[in-house]
Image (cartoon, rainbow, N blue to C red; front, side, top):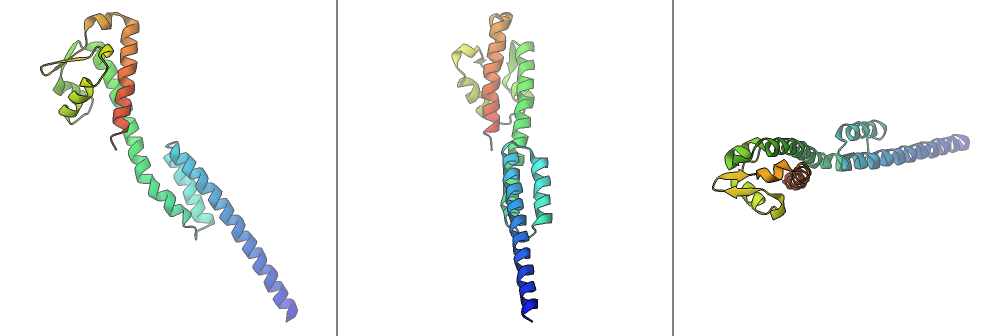
Length: 168
């Protein structure tokens, strides 16, 4: 009987050690998934979280990681929208000298024209973007200087990207 209880104690210790090892592995995977979420690598993070659920189903760590996913998804969507807006902005600046505020907002997928007008108004003067009545002007002299044009596009694009990503 004593021998049976010693065997049971050893089995219990082995089980406990195995559970502790699984828990450590799960914690490491969850930490890695958090890092991946910080890098907006959603698919990879989800794969790791599924693995954690398989190896250590008792873990509440997974739930906390899953709580972050909607915010990360929103940020990813905003980053994609920012990329799209920047590409459209580049096309507009290169192809137009004058565009209506309404058309500009439509092409950049910005719903609030008043907010867009305010954003343009707050651009530094050296960016050579002006509002006249209900039109946005990109002066030709700026566009004829390729270096100035690229610099203007870069600076406005950076501001547009920041504006878009901060929309959440």
